[in-house]
Each structure stands twice: as structure tokens, then as C-alpha cells.
Length: 83
Image (cartoon, rainbow, N blue to C red; front, side, top):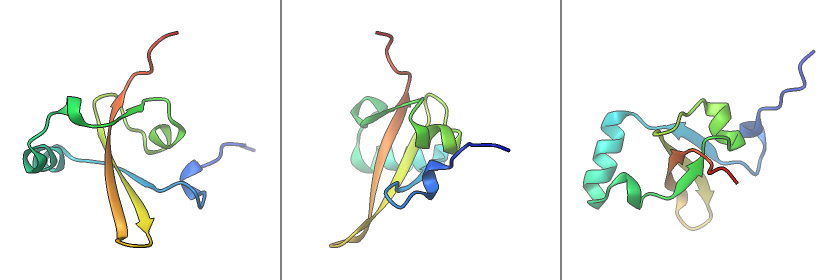
């Protein structure tokens, strides 16, 4: 019996999706930015682990919004710095 929990099933965790190379290119071109301009998310974040994102991936986070209906944000997966 496994005690693993899928954090993405929790009501407070928004949908996380790994973006394709084409989607990333479109995003960076649309906003005229580079990977350095994207907010970061650590590779060991439970939601990142659950969707099996790797360092260097970009994750689309889709939240429900009371005003917009749907709000998307993007995070660049990076390694957590050692202490």
C-alpha cells in the first residue's frame, strides 16, 4: 500500500503543465523576454515533481480567477541552491 499523495488533486493547488518547446518560443517572443526574466520554481517543488518537470523546463500554472475566469502564469524550473 502506497502513501504517496498527488498534490495536484488538492483544491488549493492550481493546474501545472509542462510547456512544449514551441509554446516556450511563442511565450518568449510574445513578451520579448528570456528565460532569466521568468519567475523561478524549484525542481523539488511537490507540484513540479508530480508533473515530472525537469530543470530547464517551463511550467504553465493555470488558476481560476474570479475576475478573469482563468489566469496563467509561467515558471522556469531551476535547481534549489545548496545551503
